[in-house]
Length: 263
Ligand SMILES: [Mg+2]
Image (cartoon, rainbow, N blue to C red):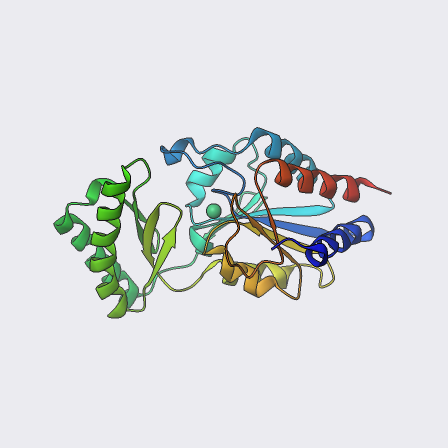
């Protein structure tokens, strides 16, 4: 929760930005930089937040990196024209560097077989219209359904996929309005580990996110940087501090920009 300790932690972190030659700002996308939307292809970023983020990225003092469960192709479309951002998509399986280069980690055979089984289950369960098949995982979405319909899709999916998860190395993840069955690694924590390895060791690093999948990233970064839960309501978290979208996010990004702009 927010108290004087976490507030001073945040203040001390922002203070370090004034003198650090380089720093990194890692952000989740949905729920953090963009409000949720029934049509997930229309979940565009908050204009107020993105304009400050653009200035932070252009400063040359802070590397801005997006880390999301979404595929790179979707992130690029939603964040256009900010295509010079580094993006880690599909929980770190895909990587798009600021120079435009792209790389992807291959899925092993055992995981691919288990995912094919999960896909067959979706067809049998009649959930194909709610499914999103992505690299290394399958998601079932229930945003836009009535509470009763959403509960029914959730319990049906949980029942079918828990069995598949138990018989494989896949993991079942709950997100804002859906479930995803996917490869255990990489996760967002693995992505942060790789990013940290490429940064100057003493560079201040912060991670902001709202999802349960962001907890992996919080755990990796704790002790090395600032971790921020961005969410309307507080929940148990490994993050150092908690802010609410949108105004508190904008305030934090503005303070970041001011501090890296100071001589
Ligand atoms: Mg999110």
